[in-house]
Image 1 (spheres, rainbow, N blue to C red):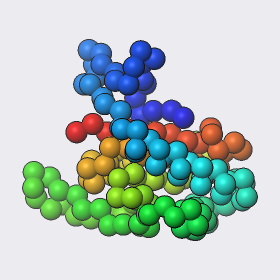
Image 2: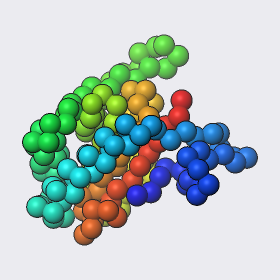
Image 3: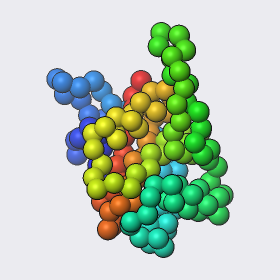
Image 4: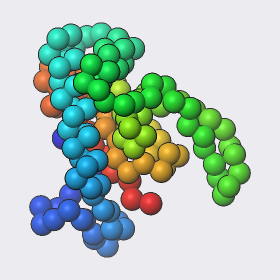
Length: 150
């Protein structure tokens, strides 16, 4: 999996002159992400690449339900600027009200896809997002972590 920002091998936090300290999410949130990745791998093993994003969303939601993992599909995200309501949007899936899932079925995950996930983290106050691209031949190559430290 790749991160929105590179991570040093020395520990859980990265700090350099150009970026602020980024703290990794806790073990419980990582365990939840692991469970969701397992569900996504099952969907990918069964369907393979090539379908539109909406098919993968339906299949992943069904798999999460089968596994007893709490989630919200297409939840409304309220965006505020200095306590002023600017509008609303929707995200793909919010797992257990703390893990943002951004689904893709594209040739390559671009920086704008990771930026979209980060924007959803900022709007929700969540710390971790997974961008999952089902278009890859091996799903592992389509998994991207995005960490947000307020």
